[in-house]
Image (cartoon, rainbow, N blue to C red; front, top):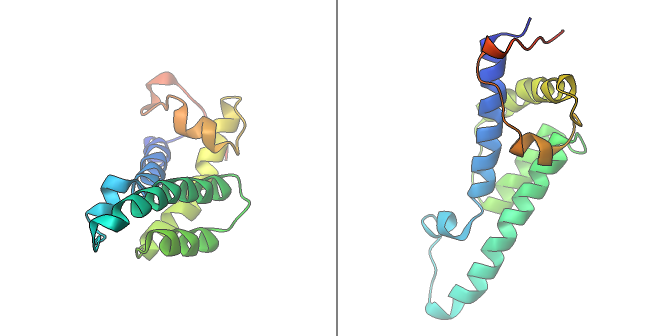
Amino acid sequence: METTNHLEMISKLRQRLLRLIKLGEPNQLRSTTQINNDNNNNNNTRSLIDLTANVEECVRCLFNNTCSVETFIQDVQRILNVTIKSSLSFFLIEAIPLAHQYLQQHQYDPLSWETFKTITLQTSLSAGFLFWF
């Protein structure tokens, strides 16, 4: 039977992936990126919007197993110019298979990031979901 810890991990996985995507939003990066002059604002805004799309594409590739966790981390670090802690790598390695299993057992496409980011996740065992390992 599935444990509360696994359900919490699945929920945290989604939160962390969505936060990474949010880091690409213009208002998020402005606080960490210095803009030299007003002439660059429009260009920076356009490229910052593109960062969000690029990060989400990395998340999609990670979630549907078309790239490894290592490749994902490298790509996101390059795109956002941030450092990702190794603890997140270990968490992703452990949590992504749980999310895939959760989706499959609830009759969703187990590799669909779009589904995973939008479905209502159960956060307790009160719903009686079973997971088989």
